[in-house]
Amino acid sequence: MRFVLAAFGVVLVLVGALWTLQGSNLLGGSFMSGSRLWLAIGLLALVAGIWLVVRAVRARRA
Image (cartoon, rainbow, N blue to C red; front, side):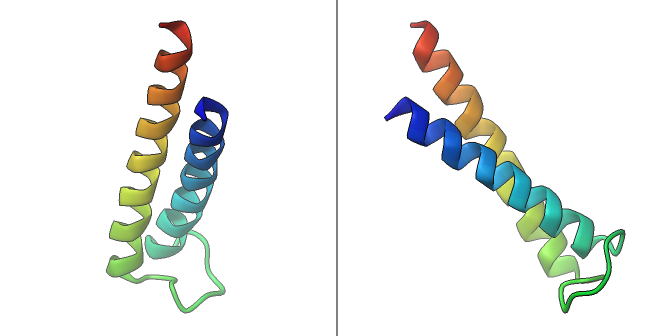
């Protein structure tokens, strides 16, 4: 279960980073480019992914 949690967290971090870059218009070529909505969604996904990875790593140590 912890591995699935960590893997899902890593996917969320990667997707969140991509959406954040597109939303901030640093990575163009999409309908999401330059959109504040996708910037906010990307940041939320990024933070959620980091939280899941940290939680999975801490659970393994316990």
